[in-house]
Image (cartoon, rainbow, N blue to C red; front, side, top):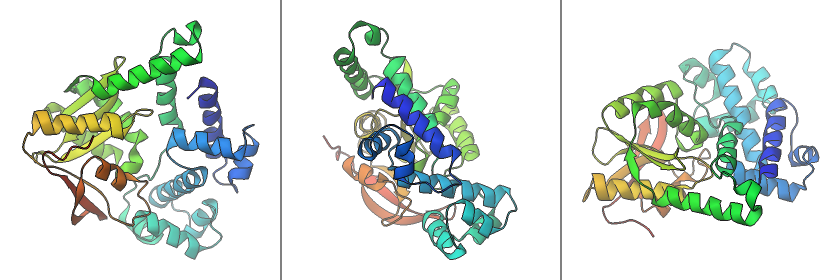
Length: 307
């Protein structure tokens, strides 16, 4: 994505974040961008993984969840701020995403985000398009720039996978924050703690391009169980993520099935992750519940790697 478009998406995200408490729709957001609704929506979806409406809804509900846990404002006030005219509509939308009504969520006191500020992930995208393609911008313009970008992506998909170091923890947290929509019930404090232990015990591997982390995978103490798999935008799970999963199967757990947990079928909080895992050769297994969130185990039998 060109530098000018990255900057525009950044301005659009800033505008949305600054006006989440006000009426927002595609017409209003595109009006401040200088792009048509069609082109802005395409650019925005490519950069964030969400359409503008879905991004706004998830960010509003995430803020509402934060206020429920860390504040004492009435639920109706939180509902109005999130753009819902009545408590019932807010309760239905909140429960669809968080699997419990607002009052119960407040009583439990366990906050986790559906989606974090998209500017964090966008900064990483801009880093790859500019910092990791040195000189190409000045020398030859668009064609060579895109050729170099393709080369860096190939490096990320075919490059060397090595054990991660404890010093990688900040990058791994940033990576998880950029992909938080893929992990039901994700909590940063818990993630830091478990990842710190996994790093110390040698259960985390990373893949780099241009000297920077672009994807990582960690496993639990149970052999073959994937605890975390993340890929930094603009790299893809289908490319870089597949390389990491294939590495586990071929180098770490040959002959052993791999498994992970994800959203259940029909979960409105699922942004397409079930389909991603299926494309990587995983298949549905038993239903589970983790930290009070309904999930499902997916298994990839040994040798089921997809092209």
